[in-house]
Length: 521
Image (cartoon, rainbow, N blue to C red; front, side, top):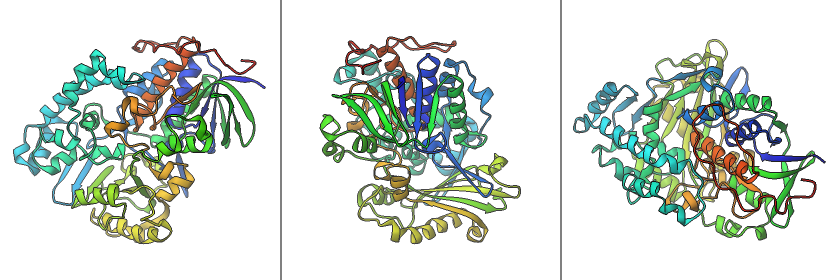
């Protein structure tokens, strides 16, 4: 039986980025994906000529993936066509007013002043403050975390004064903006982390900053087109892919993983990367007795993100007055968040997000038709909501919210429809509790308190994706792959091959990394 240098469970964004980097370094790599295509939640499906991204639709902060491509001898922007959006999105406040968010500083200042004259002129100060915050904290987000000692590095001590860990995101934004609607315009991005801005750490003001500084992009064909191209690049670098191969068991020698068993075969490996949903992978694949820090009991005490209710709609005709991205924020946003995070009930007036991508990208639908991707944040799986009963009524609630965006004829124009509830995310996508943004990003679940990239409970196992450091969101997931790949190469005593991109220092390898390798390795 051949022995792979690395096996990767899951062809999601993190698994694909790790495959590229490890393949380029000369490792023998195989990716095992239970679906019939790459991308994981960042894949697409097509029906009746309509193409939909399953998950992420905002492509942000391309710098990380651009560096990964350059490291592998490729050019992201030359090979994956993208359009920078302006406006980036339209925000409509149920409490009144709207903003067409734009990276044009003068226009954005006018958008803010039209809603809140007292906040006029404060956007540039927000940008300057967060430019400094990102520059200070970026080395921390781009490095592995192993324990409390990492808190006392000079870089973190310098960053602490800018990050203000004692403040929530909303409270931090209160230093810049007085109007709660303006603060929401710069904090709704905490939904990428599955958190309320009133509980989300203040560090994450950098999320909205990244949108304005580096752009919100639409890859032609959707974010899934990026995943598909990454799989092609990895294949060119010698990476093997096994599609429709679900990993059913890990093979152990003591606490060391030496291979996997799939529905089709068995494979041996020197190192294993888990790109599957963290909590689901642990409870399905790793006996509880082999886990010390992340036992089933401890996982049950962790906070998990919200989930999402999805409508993928193929529409007759177009809505040319609807922005590429539109977010309607509930009139009582605080109540909406409380219903999601604490009461675990469905809102009568939820916030909704709509992507109307065909005004930018006509490849996504047949001529004369268009796609709408509709998302409402909801509670993750909870006994309070039975989706077999609640699904139909909540669909009507969401469609009613679309009518408030001017889509008054939406029901009669639907030609294709697919629904995805938290129960579907749980069963169909194998996401623990259907929590689409994984472990929440509160202070007790960040940095060394998050599952580590070199997984601490098992030998020879590494993590990539939203469930490990640095966290969720596409750019951060790509960064997790870069951190993990460097650790793996260091542990295997291999040097990364570079192609001109700037690189940070390599991480320290574990002691005696070849100890207890499976026989034949």
